[in-house]
Image (cartoon, rainbow, N blue to C red):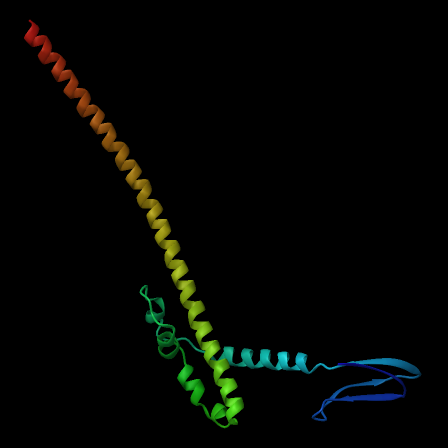
Length: 173
């Protein structure tokens, strides 16, 4: 929704629907004012602030389970490796009306899940990189050992051929 007004005032006060002062301008003369509905922008800003607030309050624990190389269900990670249950039950959340409490709990759930899964993914990525390095080192060692085995085979079979030649000479004399 967008409206245009032409006003001629000295002081302009802009209010939200809740009568909060947004900004004040002192202007002389006639000017054109474009007003757009910024409720969606405020909602996005409010949502971002809400997510940021709860993101900062999430704490990780039980790092051994997060680092486990076997599959761990997301729900188990959220409940056992974050402070999700404590955040849900704090008075600040419980005092909200049902609709707002549901919204906040959904944000808490999202933030706890995201934080623990990001941490786990980072740990698993680091572990995979370590295993790649070890695998590469083992491949190099294997290659060196195969080269050594082939060299020994050549010498062994070379000696075997010499022995057969000498035996053939001995039989011929």
